[in-house]
Image (cartoon, rainbow over all chains, first blue to last red; front, side):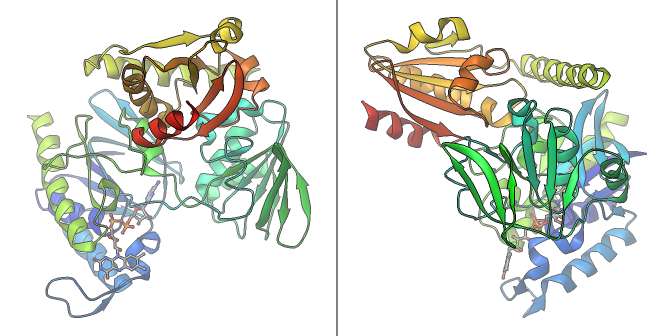
Length: 296
Length: 136
Ligand SMILES: Cc1cc2nc3c(=O)[nH]c(=O)nc-3n(C[C@H](O)[C@H](O)[C@H](O)COP(=O)(O)OP(=O)(O)OC[C@H]3O[C@@H](n4cnc5c(N)ncnc54)[C@H](O)[C@@H]3O)c2cc1C
């Protein structure tokens, strides 16, 4: 599938970017689950012209507007991005490949900590937040992946090629059916419904104690909550997030990689809807003109 | 076996793309006083009078790439007190095993040849500096 502009994230910033880009008559795709936006749980009282509103209502209306102007919305998650000839390829957990000339990262902030005993203590001694970075330390070992969604499934599928045994601990598995088909025919063992109560060890990780008291012996714990974080996606594009996970942009919402724009919470504080909308507008307009120039 | 080959080729492809990309952007060549350390040269390197800091990294690790320029800057700022090295954990598995490294970037700190502390993950430059200074 070919697009001029692909937007990662269907929160406030992504939807506003979609509206502005689509109104410039370029072909736009937005990928993301609306209910995963930070706004969907918020009650807004400080946005100009709206006295009070439910975040989810605003998002629904925004999605309708984006569609009205011609943007296509895919309620999926992006699992990888790569640079290609003349643009980018975005891969989703629905196994779609979307090619585009310009890319907008509008994936919000990700909170990836599990907040259980042992997590901090054993970070780097068995606990990891980056399957891509750290899989090679677990050759022939036993690992557990913690998380519910596609991101956790992707990590489990990667780790199974390194580790001898992969457990996947989930409250409820919510990964895409395409990924689940791969998981089901693999050696990955799903433990669900379950969730860690603590991570235990001695110098290094030795296991996870689940909330029901059951213990799983593992050498590694990969924490993969939520969708794949923007910092991990950005690195595939040669963009390096700072230590807070934010992506630097200029006033035009351009990142350091040509053709890649970013907007919303991902570019840093203030984490507010007004700022996300403003940046979404700028990123949408600029991504559309970038894509159009490529054609001329 | 086939899967291993495929993984390797994906890695190689990603790495090449990254390298090509950094070259295109005219990224600065490595600056500073960071010595490349291998399994073989490791023990000799940590036995110095100065505090020794070793940045353990791998090419496909994003946070490692973000940390590298900070370490380079610190290697200039702290040159008289601290010796800085970097070790590719993929090519040098012995050190990784010996120090139970399981997530990168990991920065190992040594004093008089003895391991004293580790810092895991990407941190602000000033926080790193403060951590090293505390050890002096
Ligand atoms: C409880 C709460 C109350 C708040 N109250 C206010 C308030 O009163 N006023 C105010 O201005 N702001 C408020 N905020 C902040 C506001 O919600 C955010 O600033 C705003 O939502 C940021 O928009 P965004 O588009 O950058 O990110 P989000 O709205 O969070 O959207 C990010 C989107 O990216 C998607 N995504 C992430 N990763 C991927 C991936 N790998 N693939 C595909 N999609 C992905 C997510 O699914 C999500 O849809 C509140 C936030 C919270 C949590």
